[in-house]
Image (cartoon, rainbow, N blue to C red; front, side, top):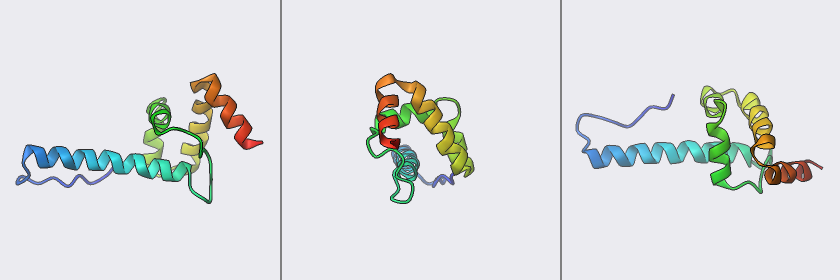
Length: 95
């Protein structure tokens, strides 16, 4: 997992901001992974949809474990069942 930048000397507000930064950083790393110039998986996907998909079926845990090929595979599988509109976009993108 990620090391949380906490210490006994942080105020509640500082700790709260550290949690938010950690979560945003994780989302950004997932987004970059799915939309890197090398992979270019889902440049059309909205962040809110990515969040919903990664929360399904333990996909975020695959990312956290470092199993990126399995993460991408499972993400695409879940994306196809997430909504018909998004599944259609994904199919058109692959063509």
